[in-house]
Image (cartoon, rainbow, N blue to C red):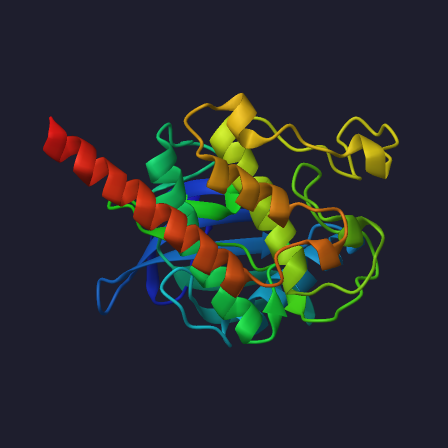
Length: 281
């Protein structure tokens, strides 16, 4: 499989996974020996144009960002055959580790440490004028040393964008995404809160785009507080999640910067309590 794929200047090392019309590979730059990741997006049918567009969008937006908790995208190559764009090769930062979806932390302290980093990355992205719009456990990579990286900017957009179609993941999508209203930083607040809820409890919140296709009303969308499902979750953290996933954007925490600030205080207290507990024993 890897022998059929050639990328000028790079050695193909390992197949890492796949997504919608895309495959991810671990590659090594021949001159420097530096590791990178390759996202290969292939157009097989005319309907696949949107996947190519998402890759081009990811490259454009990621190129305007620079933050330790946002995956960097270094280069984009367009592969044409018979003068038609058939593939996109996106060369990205190689981020070792597993997604939160694949390796859900058991300790609340570990969850908070990861999501403090995610909040910082999203706050930076919003300050730069963009919404990630698809924060979920499968888009958070955690390295063996605990460093978290937000990945996949294919659905990202400028603040205030109204999408032409519904985009998002059912368990994490914000109501305004389903209603195709303008997206802003509070959309990321909702997605973030929904991802944090799942990571703390192992359960998704109810959203207006359920996976089973059943119609949901506003009154049906109240999530059981996280501290009722997981007694290790402190009330302040459960309240933070509730304030992130309010139905109306105006009722949510105003910005990811504010989320990061509140979560930082919670994390500080958890770490302090852990130190005090260890000292007492």
